[in-house]
Length: 490
Image (cartoon, rainbow, N blue to C red; front, side, top):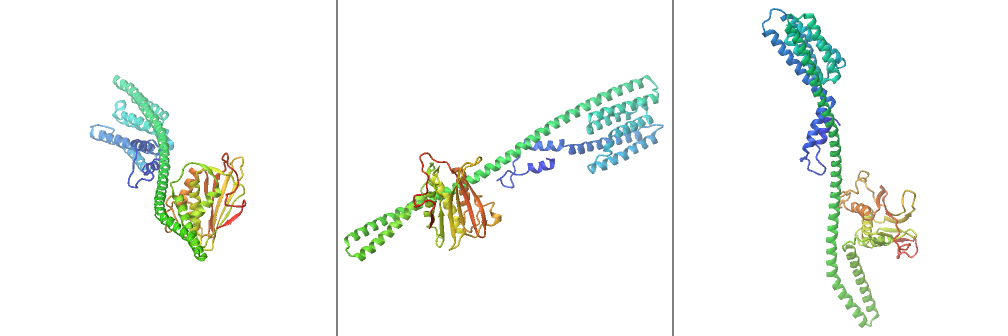
């Protein structure tokens, strides 16, 4: 990851946080800055920038020394040499501004050129005692900053050779000149070693910091992924809690209605039965029996609604899949869009009972049936079929439940999002139906729910449940189905 990309990554807010709020660990900011410094391209550009400044500093000091200090000879030659150096420094500066390194492929050639350049400056000035000999130190420093230790040692060798040749050519006039040559070479060697050691230590520390930074980035990305997962789980848990609270409120409301309506209905039913026993008129008795039958039907409806809305039992039990489908259908028949629809159920032969949470399976089937009713128009059919999927070497046996409708279908662009909480294609939907179906199927029932197809001709959902026989359970179809695999039309 480049420093720029790292900066962008480090400035991304954590998932599910306001876009204007950003929390970055100080250690991550420091690591980002370190990555910018020790990135090879960035480090080379910074080294080149330092080199350019050192060169201009040396040239300015040289010009001041040549032109402000009184001298009898050598001024034109020295100014000419410094001007050549200024031209080279200018070209190096322009290349640095473009992010390039001048004569990058000829590094040893540059060291040789600098050794010759400094030797000539000393020769035109005071020989081995010339202050320009300190340029050797600057040259070694620049080389150590920009290049490897091997090239720096080579540069030191070239500069030592240049200075020795200068001493031999200039023929020292006094003993102090010999001492100057020796001390200069000693200090130049010591400076080269010290600079190489320090830059090597800096590079080593930089490499370690880059490795630590990569580990920090990896941990940061892992943390962000975990935060995203936990945030999604929290959102889903909140959605489930909202749905459970709504169901609990509906249960309390249904129980209250059942109590308020059930008591008068029971009284009315008792009065009608008493009148029926006392009245000998056959016509009146028939009419009273008809009224009593309708009252019984109302009471049964209330019992079904309150039974569905009672607090969910989380205990696993032996479950007949067909019974859960039939119970869901018995609740769905009171839905306002049930009218004019044909519900066809085709049950598999000898489907095994399974061990699961019965109420939650009913909830899943009811949601799918209600969605199918919403999607279809009058005269359309909804088909519910079950099957036993045989066990294979890699996949255990499963029970499959198909829910097909002849509705308008789900838009293609919405099909990947239908199981997300609060996502709906209905005008008055909550966006929790299919989300609750998937959550219950996966986490409570141990199965899976998928969208098989959805076109303008209809939609099909497929629910799979683990086909694990409960000890003591018997295989077979639901008791309301007289013959196994018989189709029912509701």
